[in-house]
Amino acid sequence: MKKSTKKPALAAANTPSDNNLPSGSGPASRGNSDFRTIAEVLDTRLPFGLQRRTAQSVLGPQSAVSLAELRTDVHGEHAKGGSLFLCAQCEQPVFVAQRPAEPDVPRNGDAAYFKHFSAEDAPPCSWRTQNLSSIGAVQYSGQQEGLDHLTLKNALAECLKHDHRFTDVRVEKRVAGKDGNWRVPDVAAVVGGKVLALDLQLAALPISTILERASFYEENDIHHIVLTDAVDLVRLTQQAFCDMHLTMGGRIFAVDDSSIAASLSSGRFQLKELSIVPRLVPGRPVHNIWESRLVGIDAILMDPFQRRKEGERQYSQALMTAANASFGPQRQAIRRAAAKNMSSAAVFEHWNHIARAIGGLNEDSAIPQGVGAVLAFLTQVEICCNVAPDQRASAQLELQQRLKTLLDSRHALHWAPLVVQVFKALPGIEPAICPANSARLTALLTQTHTVKPTLRWYAGMIGVLHPFLAFRLLVKAPKFLPSLRLPASRA
Image (cartoon, rainbow, N blue to C red):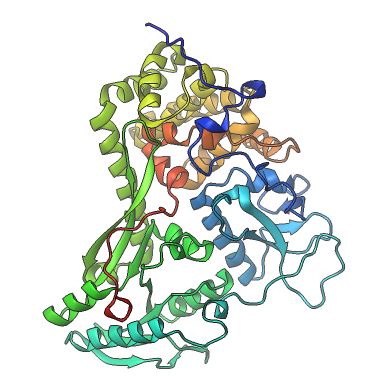
């Protein structure tokens, strides 16, 4: 096949130039190199004695989704009395923080860092920095409640009262738990014999507070809804809000004048649901936008785990449908070649076709950086997930061999975060990996060399070819919201 002769602009050591990257995907050295006071941590998820990792190797490769997930996991484990990460100097628990949002601050792991949890009896540590005790009231200059919050809260209660399916509708009713603890949601009601608690979130809250609140309602079998008004474009890009919607399949409920009007006129409680969806536009990287729709209680009362999985699945399906419509033959040719473990050079004409369409890197970068081994591994992962039971053993052996090839490759250090993402996306795959590959992966994760953002450079191409990873690699809070009408109080 004819080979493209057009070469991309490359930096030293075949590293793609930032000019080839989507916005916000540049290396961590872009003004972010001196904020990580905690340079090394102990990753307790790894075997004892092999837990020391650099902060850069843990955080740098994180996408917006995996960062939100990691923050949630760290705080969730701490709430249970455990620790996922310890400061390598004092061995005290640490959490993942994120630099405040600015136009030049990426919303992925490049701007994340570790901080110590507050503890009165903590030993001295030169890596310890001051923690903020609260970030919530800053939004309203110390006031307990803003006018918008008060207005929308009462509007929510009025909408619920107009729906005969809801009873005992109360504003700021104390809800008691089984152990004597209690919470005061903005609005509470009873539907189908079960308590529904709604909290209107207009200000950023610490993730620990968000998780404590969610845990209380889950333990007491109370359906809890967090919603916003979705008018402020900046709000949903703040990390506190990303922690909520990125760990819920890219979905968040909202209330606005149209949902209020629909609820009151129909006598059926409705909310806006904002969902992150992918868009393919010729010549542009894969990007995200918000879609909005009015939803009723079937969506509002959906099991949170099911809702999250549905959001992730819908995103992947939408991207695959768009990709097949735009370059289906090229995509299928690459996947067939990878399934047969053929040389990737045989189909890089097809690779270049897709790369040109989505602003990806062409073959001159992909071949030397070992993309062929990556595609062979990912395709075999999909085969193992769908193979017939009588062929599973041989498929898993082939998967182990392909993973070994990837982990032994020249750029294995920079592709190791991809393997971690696969295990996160498909937990059932990890047990099929042999001990030798697990040991090799641990050795790569604990190296002290800087991990290049290779995964981020190829996230668009990988997501298009293997949509099961698309949500984890590509989703982030869109810069633009759908057209939402302002509530009358702000018109």
